[in-house]
Image 1 (cartoon, rainbow, N blue to C red):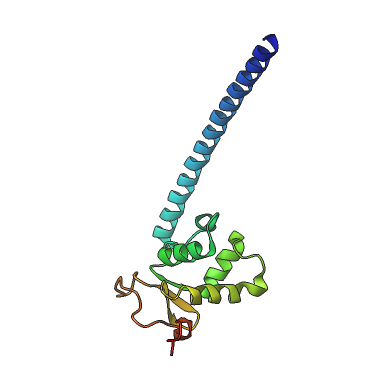
Image 2: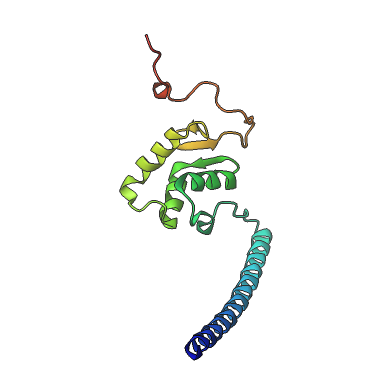
Amino acid sequence: MANGSLVNNELSALLAGLRAERKNRQQQVDEIDQRIAAVETTLALLRQRSGLPEERGPDISDLLGKRQLDALVTIAKKKDGCFKVQEAKRLMLRAGLIRNPKNANSILYTLLGRHADKFERVAPGEFRLIGTGRGETSRARATPRYPHTEPLPLP
């Protein structure tokens, strides 16, 4: 029984130490958040005084931990529904969602083609999230973009 209480005491001490460490790190995170807020406020004031437009695009941190499709939707929403494939490619490469830059265009265009019910081609290299921005209604495309993906009728 003495051995069991020794293990219990050691585990309790370890748990208390870990909780103290978590509290310390949470304080560090809170301090960093305050510094980030201060820098963002300063940057916004400088942009306002100099007449520079505010940055509205997605940040890489918005894409971390997401799937490729979710990242494209996030990019589109941050850009009022429209985005350029090259910009999405650059962001997704930097976020680590696409590893090989040589395959990035193929990956993105394949993804956009497979999800033609969510994205609509606006111009070469530019797509829009269906249901957002620039006069688009919330209904999906009436005719499929890729008719060859529908099953053929049986004779």
